[in-house]
Length: 115
Image (cartoon, rainbow, N blue to C red; front, side, top):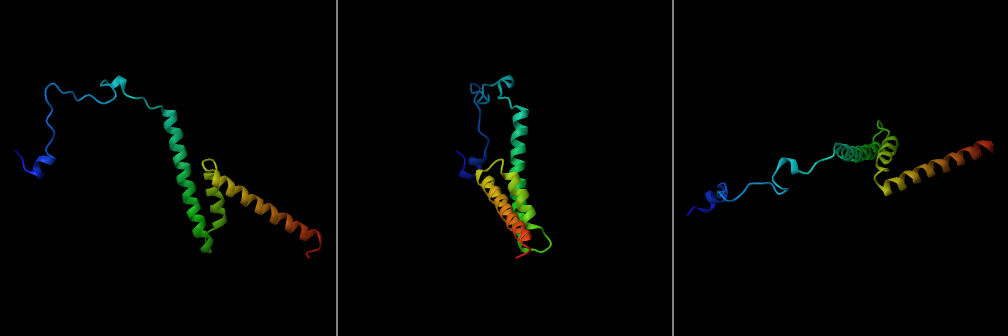
């Protein structure tokens, strides 16, 4: 009989009749295949989300610091995230509409002599 500490860390004994075959069937040929194209697609999605979040964070910081262009980073982050998130797509559309409204308002003032 072993004490609790030594016994819990000791390697498990494998009987001669017990197999150490993996759960997927045992042979390397039977291992699940990973499609390289699918892996690249997943890596691109993860990279796009990570970059999008990083740009959003930079944008928020840039709103308070005078040497960073916060709006630019927010737009870049929302653009990257818009392919993955409906909320980011909605925010980006709202931002585009707000810019369009301001542009029309500014053009309206210019045509009325600046009033």
